[in-house]
Length: 243
Length: 266
Image (tube, rainbow over all chains, first blue to last red; front, side, top):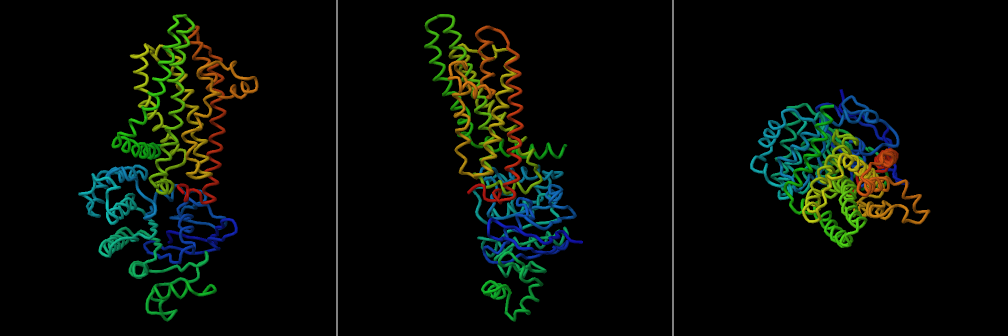
């Protein structure tokens, strides 16, 4: 059973083909990495999965729901986090979590917020305005927001960007723990190769809107004869023609 | 239904939290209506100074016009500014990927608009009563119809502005502040439509405000309710609202197709 099934997905902006007939699946309970250089098509792909961008061609099925016809049923069971999308700065952490708890119709919201605050070490920050938090604290709040509805699918766009190594490690540990205990699927777009190696059971390599290769981090490293995933990434990114 | 109401409440709650913590925002809500009222109120007093009956009534209609036109202006701005707050806080991305339907987003913005309008106009209405002895409630039951029509007018204008924000992004932001003000000369708030040149009268007649303020003046001048004007206003508001909903829905679909929802704040 797959949490995400993508078939023949394409998106063009004018003359630019941002995503070009890609197919992939994200199995339930798996963490899949979406890698590629800037402009490879990762953000466009995630935007289509989130339903804020309509594909020109192809189909997306998320948690058994066709995104073209039934996207709100899927959206209620998924969530998203990106450092490039902020939470209202003037609201406190508790208020932000409450707003999203209502939007996702979370039962026993106060208990859920208390549990998340404990889990992400936010208890002392609940009454602080989101705008007054450090980058690391904001990321923890954003992740708490992303887990508020106990999503079956989590889409993460560079979840540890701009974090110090300690906080980034903490975030990765929390993501691993959530996936293990909930059986949720995670699609992770990241430029941090060690993060991808640690978290992802499989990796999709994107370039010029296409998926040019995929496999487990170990299999990709072996296939390209490199020492780590970063070198694989560079080999693919610098290749003159699609690999 | 319960889930939908909860989602709407979620967004309303977000704005209540914002205003609860920001006194400049609360002051701003009441600042312009109060300022307008003071300027026009003293003008009305000057006009009414002649003691002629018509001058007294003109003074009353000026103050009533200021107060009621602010309902339309504040209703429109209440929706569009609340939407802009989401753009300014870079929060729209989270909202559009939540299960909140576009119609629920609009419903939440309308609720916030009602609250903003009431908070903004209450001080002005009190000042009108104490400073100019003009009690807005003296309009009686028709006041509810006047308010309803003006709020409807503000709302369809705001849906049009949001549609433009979908289409042109934050660069259309200025329209949120200026669109309704631009309509004011044709709304016939302070004068009858007959003052306008013939060709402008035709345009003014398709704006609900002309009929609303004509009805208001009849109540103040002749103490009679012109139901025909109310029906015209309601019918026109219905037509404009349907058109605005159509344009909003179309632009939302286009924005999802072009990727404008992702880059709306730029």
